Image (tube, rainbow, N blue to C red):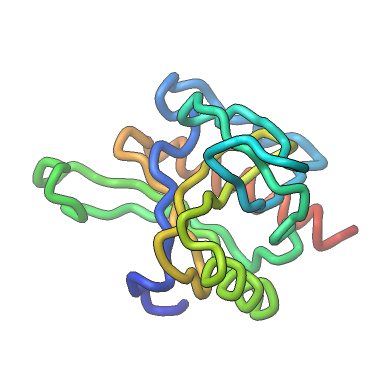
Length: 171
C-alpha cells in the first residue's frame, strides 16, 4: 500500500448519515453502483441538485463521472488510536480507505489538481454518501472518516464499496 501523505488523501468528514443515526447500511444489494463526481456549492448550468446524505446540505453535481467502481482497486476499514487530538486517549478512530487503480489514480490526480475548491462527491446507487472540498491534489487514495463512525459502520461501508467495485469489474 502507498504511504499516506497529505497530498495523497482527501478526508470525507461526516461520512455516512447512518453513522450518526446508528442504522445499518445496505450491504447486500447485488448491484451497488459507485461513482465519484465533481460538485459545486452553488447551482449552475447543467448541474444536478442533490442533497448530501451526510451533511444534509444541497450540492450541485457535474454530470460527468470522474471515477466509477471499476476504478477502485481495494477498500479497507482501518482502525487507529490517538490519530487526532480531539479523540480521547485510547479511543479508537475508524476510517475507510479507498484505493484506486493506476488509471483511476492518474485521472483523480489530474481532476483534483485542476479543481481545487470544488467538491468531490462519492455516490452509492445515486445517493451522495460522502463529500468534501478539494484542497489539494489527490494521488492514489481517499480516506472516509467521521469521529462518530463505529467499527461496524466502517466495515459495512467497506463491504458496500467493495461490492460495488466487484459488480463494476464484472460488467
